[in-house]
Length: 505
Image (cartoon, rainbow, N blue to C red; front, side, top):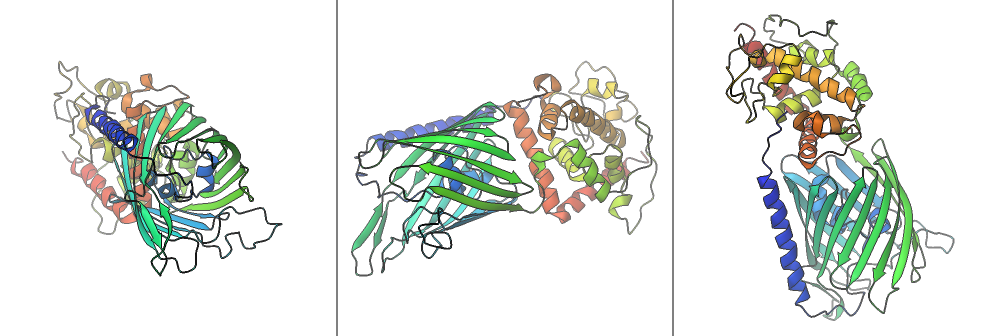
């Protein structure tokens, strides 16, 4: 509930990204354009990215991200594997908190580069035989900035071709809730693929692309991409949400050897961690124009799709509900320590159940607000485990004096009940529950309003950047608890120790 967070570090990251893009852009403008042959570029792979007009540079967010912008891996909160039927490519990525996200991509696995059967009646397929690639990638998020790198090997579609190393780097930054930008530098040192007898079979030159995604409305995204060399522009409009979305895009190539303009249309389905992507390419020089890919996400459920009804169902299956029915904040009872205490016997678990708040979510909010410190005080006067503001606490029935300087409260439970961890936890969850109801079960909006205040968050969104960063932090931590039962148990014990330590004081 801290609404005085400094934006200075965030601005520094944005300025650093802008300066980096400018320097690289200037460098490439000063170089000779040696890319006269359009085949001197690694082929682009990925049904969804191609369907978005090739404009996945600024919005890459799945296991295929390294094929477009390796920084996109940092956005993953769950493991993800995607198999592109059309292009024989398998992509795998897995986040390891707090280290970062790792990914691998293997391209051109089909024997005949057509799915199962190389036959005229098979509509699925695109690339020629043998453009093999193997990429190993890593990405990490630093506040609003995502950074990713890839290294791997490529070979040419000829017998006797050797493998040659390649290196990529990418950046992504969400400047606000309406604009995200990205940059990718591929084949930094260039790639020369040779035959076993020493002949040069193929070369891949340096390539830089800049992307931007404009979101004028939560269900409308405008993807754009510009390649400096060779000159190339892609754009796409995507309409929908994470469950179902349709897109139509177009590309413009300023090269006499390729069609000037082509368009593509397709859709994506993503339900219960399973995804399906389809794209049709209207490009004259392609014989096989249908692209299809399948994917699956694993390890937990997607936190951003939770609603209040989902939370209630999970709470019933994972916890023992409390018998308390009063809406007022109860007087905490003294509980004797039990050597073999089960999760359902924890006071904190019962409090979460009473407010119908999912346990990992409750722990994640406390972690983000106070890191389980019951006497924490923020720069704007929020206090306790859930960082409750004085006015909010009074409105919820807690005794809080009128301070001349709310940033210097009396850390005394008899004077300021926000420092009673039981009452603070009840008050914070009750307040969050009202926000969840106000925003119609939208967990992201409710979390954002908890951080920046409901006056700055409309019922239909979108969130301002600071609120969105906070919501993402809480959701990421909540998912981390789901994926790591040991860590959740440890933090649950920390909270239980705090609650018990204050029972007799």
